[in-house]
Length: 68
Image 1: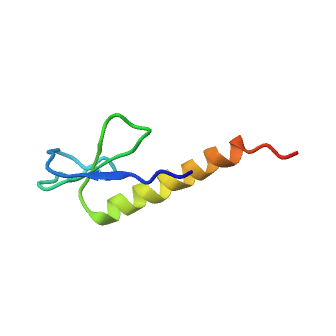
Image 2 (image 1 turned 120 degrees about the horizontal axis):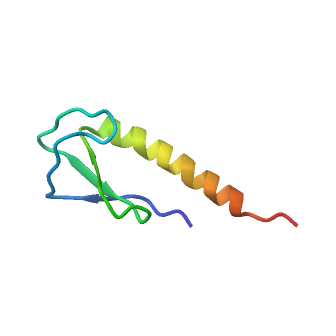
């Protein structure tokens, strides 16, 4: 089962967690694996982070499979 990150509204941040750019209206996302939400300056930074996050989730799921 793959759990998709959840977007959070009405929160504040100073810098993008991906590129470090100062932001006024951040896009916040929290996953089931992280207790701390991630802040993004744009949809492009969010998409870049999401691609890598999904790739890591697939690698974790692939390692846990046992072939008989």
